[in-house]
Image 1 (cartoon, rainbow, N blue to C red):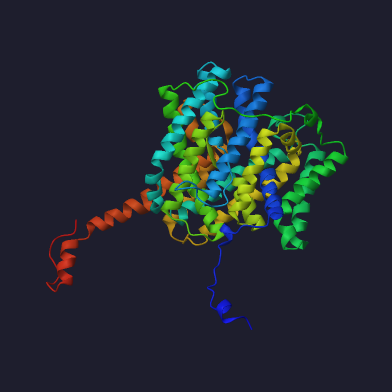
Image 2: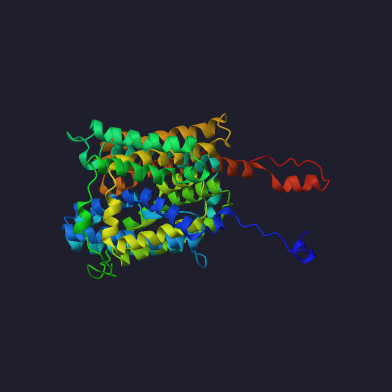
Length: 474
């Protein structure tokens, strides 16, 4: 029998989100997050750098700067300090919502590094605005009931699945060309996904938790053995690549680009709110307005760092939300480990080149599962909503339809001004705004109207025994 003093010790339980796993386990799970994150992480600097006509050397520098900043942003969000960071397993990456506005800003300023300086001035301004607005935005959580958050997450998953399918066929760069969707690429993708499913079905708890990592490594190994995965770029990459503040020069602050980026950040704040609620649902940790405010402050700080360290605005990455759902590993310190891995990748380009050698079809297969899981979390939340109530059903239906406009019909808004396309050109943004506005229209405004129609003075008098009042209802 245990000593009396031992029996009197209070039992303390640690929430799975706050659990610190053994270092080898942290490293393994963290590296799985990095592999899931990497392809999407490098896409933003590649698209922006190519659009602004940067040289290959400058493009490589942008990628390294993005990885370092994403790693720092992830540590801030997951670990947290003061009232900054949600302290949830959220991996931060450059937001795709800002890509089109940044391209327009950079090209309008002449392209090249001159255009980047104007972009970074706008990015810093947007980050400061997000940080200042965060406390007020956190108080708006009442406007994000399950019908909105569930719709938002379903929209994110459904809209991003086609992005994963582009990788399945060989990547967006090959889309429409003769090398896109070859039988070999489809075989790699199908084999990787099948392998992941087999591990999920027959593997033990530990193997199931790293199924995505095993699929990525296994698919890459098979492609390398067959000569379809090359590591030539590893020899060309350097051992050290430090991203220094204001590498291209001091940012230029111009009014219209600054306003455009503030609008972009306000839009991404809605997306971040949905991501925080999704992670709360997955991990079982309660989410309130203060949690949302801390997450938004972290986005603001990370975005300011992005402008200083030659990078971009940052939000939570949906791929990694899906990965947490699949792996069921909810410790935020796993994501902190992933953040440190990203910093190392950004500082050691040779290691990043190894990770970048994972074939697109292999990445696409894993992403299909992860994005699908994001949509599943949305459906899981919607299961708590009474969809027999026609107003809830119409919010979901119209929001899904709106999200598919720029997704299924890419040129739908191409004749709109650049500023309008920045908002409407993203299916996630359009679907999210539609859900929020329809909820306001059907529920919030209706509730206020009914509240105002009640004769509260008469009701109080009635409760005091004065009897019913004859004051007409407004």
